[in-house]
Image 1 (tube, one colour):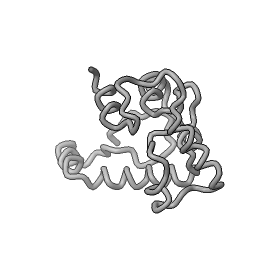
Image 2 (tube, helix red, strand yellow; image 1 turned 45 degrees about the vertical axis):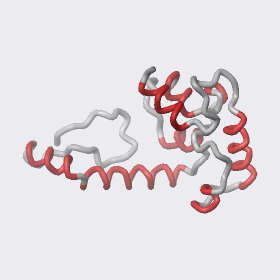
Image 3 (tube, one colour; image 1 turned 135 degrees about the horizontal axis):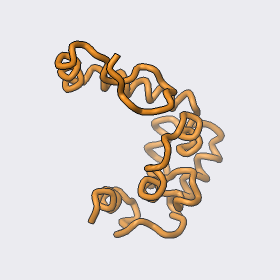
Image 4 (cartoon, helix red, strand yellow; image 1 turned 90 degrees about the vertical axis):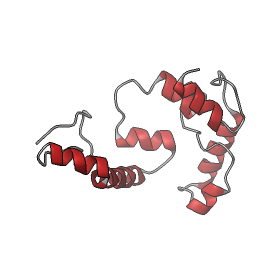
Length: 138
C-alpha cells in the first residue's frame, strides 16, 4: 500500500479501502452545504459540517482530495485563484493562509539552522505568486 493510499484509508470518513472511482456522496453533500451558505463557513460551522473534510470542487477527482492528489497534483503548480476555487475558499483566505504558513516555516527551528549554515541566505521565498517553486539563495 502506498503512502497516499495509507493516508487515505486512515482519513476517509467512509472507511473505503481504496480511492473512490465514482463521486463520493459525503463530499457532494459537503459541497452543496458550502454552496448553500453563500460565504465561507466559520470555524464553528466547519466543526459541525458534514463528515468529509476532504471534499474538493473537482468532478474529475470524484470530489475527493486524495484522488486529486493521486491523479492531478503532479501537474503544474496551481495559482491562488485555482486553489481557492478547488477548496471553495476566497483568494484572500488562500493568500492569508499561505502567508501564515511562510511565516511559521521561516521561524521554525530547522529553517533557522539552515539559514545559519547558509550564512543568512533566503531559505523560503517571501514573495507569494512566484511562478516556479524553486528556492533561491539571494
